[in-house]
Structures are given as structure tokens and as C-alpha cells.
Length: 162
Length: 162
Length: 162
Image (tube, rainbow over all chains, first blue to last red; front, side):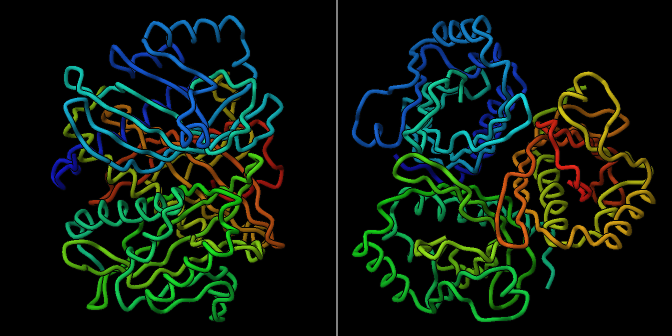
């Protein structure tokens, strides 16, 4: 269902702010806050554009509850892999695609730079977030966040949230 | 002519949304939708910062009608060059520079990442859009879009819209 | 002090526009305009995430008056180092962190691409701006701008404003 111009004007700043806050939590290494961006139940997955286009299951990360998101953070902290590098997200302007009883659908481009411990930087990932957003109290939360990476060659160490 | 703060507040979200939609159409490979972002008549060109500063003609792409834009898409589809790689635009916040009877002038920074078929990513282009925007019905469209690339070393395969 | 949703809605477009104008002045090589983005007195420094986290003094650039900012521009023009390369900033959405009598605190992510004279591009810096903003007349200006670079390996030629 398409969304009226007035509704878009209302939603757009809120969706943009949520996406920015989400990125900031990851880049600030506040991973423990990450599950709080999601509604319950939720769906989170990371896939490639090719897998997404072909309808193949997400190969990288799949979580269908906030508990699974929390478990992932715990695992990351124990593995300590994440400590070795930093990330910087740049997030573009969301496109509000529609709204149904299930929530608001949005499509938001992103780019992530990785900063290695020795200071080297590289383009880590680009892609788009395909989101379904719902109101929880007076805040927007992700019912679904499907991270579609443009490249199918994604670092096998990829374990951090995107 | 300078633009009042109120007029900027009205225009800015619309110009930003148009720039985002334009980028999304290209990144989604919906090239056939690309000419629809332009008014008729229109001017579209890609040049380098150096050529632009020196007032030299655009060396890369020049089109002064929507028909030429459509022809370019047809040529791209036939050459099939575009299929081999993907693009991801990140677009910054527009600056609204002025408004005359000819339209609204805006200057918007961008960055494009290219994703090769094997998954390799590189910085493909950065620069700014120098736009003249007009109302067509109740939508904004590009009367002019001059793409000024920061680097004068642009891939000679460059044939996709930026 | 936290900021009400209404106040954020008022501030956010203004802070975003200021950050965009600031970046545009640098990328357009209008360095002489750069000190005008600051209130007087002001604080400007460039540091790394590691130095910032450890509370170490900024190693790269430190200026605590607009006169020092102007001196830096003069030095850059005389050294002519800046002429050899260009920059392109992409700035993300600011987060409004709080407001006190000292001003509005904001945190804004950025990415800078460097374009060498021969056309080569590289990721020059990523990080975040930690700003304190105040009203000067009816415009927002930086009381403080602390540029926290993600990487601690920053080009020793770094002399341009970020």
C-alpha cells in the first residue's frame, strides 16, 4: 500500500533517525544495545544481493528472535574477534515503500568502512537495508531488518552486526 | 536569487528525496526509469571538476533531451556492459543555492562504489550534482543535472548514468 | 540534559545543514570561509578514537581561537600543500545528544575521500564530529568541533581541515 505524502513527511525523519542511531550503536561498540532496536518477535538476516534476488536463504546471519540477537552479541564478546577492528557506517536517505498492518516498509542504502587495528581502512560492505518498522510504545523498532549486501564476496570473519 | 529559510525548509526534503530516488533507480538497475527523473527539455552531462572549472565541454556524457537519455539506456542494455557490475550511490545533503524563473539550483555531494562481478568493491567516483529543478505536475524533476566528478581519471568504460 | 522530541525536530535540520555547508566549503576549496563556521571563542581539534578514549591530548591539530584557524588557512595557502589534492566529505545524520547553557551537543559521522592530482582516489578518513553548537545571531555556529578519526594512522601530511 502506498503511503500519503503527509505520512511520508512524518515517517521519514523518524526512520532516518532510527537507522542513524542503529549505526551509531554499532560503530560505538555498544553491541549490547543492538537487540533493543528490534521489536519482538523480529527477523534479522544478512544476505547478498544475488541470494536475495534468487530467493535463496540467507547464508550469513539469520536470527528470528531478540534472544538470538543477544546470543550473538555474547558470542562476539567471548570470541573477542570484534575487538580487533572498528567500523564506520554511512547511511543514506530511506525510501518509504509502503505501509500495511504489518508495519512500514523502507529501503535504505548503506556503506561500511572497516578500520583495522593497525589503522588501515577498507570498504567493508555496501548494500541496502530492507526494513519493516513498527511502533513500540512511541518509538519505531525493526520488525524485520534484511541486510542485502551488494557483494557476494563477504569476509568470512563477518560476525558483527551490519 | 537567494531563497528564504522557509522555502529552503520546504524544498530541502523534496530535493533530498528526489536525489535518493534517482540513485536508488540506478543501483536497482531500473535504468529504464532513469529518463523519467528529468523534465523535457533537459540537460544531462558528466564532466570532471577540472573541465568544469575551466569551462571546457563535458568529455564524458552529454544529452540534451529525454530521447537521448532513453537512447543511452537502450545502448547500455544492448552492449550489456552494465550487467557485469553493480553500483551503490551514497548521496549527501543538498545545498539549495538559489531560485529563479528557470528553477531551483542545488548542489549535492555523492560517492559511488562499484561492485564487480567477482565481488570486489572499489571507489568508483565522487563529486557533486549541480542541478536545476523544476515542478512538473506536483513532482520535482531535473531540468539540468551536471555531474561533476572530482577525479579527472574516470574509467573509460563509464557508460552508466551517475 | 536530554532534548525534547520537538526541540530535536527543530535542531536536526539546522545541524545537518551546518555540517553539510562546512563540508562543502572545504571540498570547494573555500578555506578562507572555514573560520566563519565557528563561534568566538571556539575549540577545534583533530584526534584519533584511541587518543580520545584514553583522554590523551589531540596529536594532530589543536586551535582554541578563530585567529588560530585563520592562521592555519594562511599557512596552508603559503605551503601550497593543499593544492595538490582534493577532498570529498560525505556526512551522515547528526545525533542530538543534549543541550545545556553551553550549547547543543551533537555527534555526526563522516567519511572523507581524497582525490590525488593524478586522479587516484582513496579513503582518507572516517570518524565522527563531536560538536557543541551555539546560536550566533540567528545562525548556528561551532563552539567546539572535535574531529575524532577512527584510524590512528593518519597521513602525516594532514594539514587540511576535516
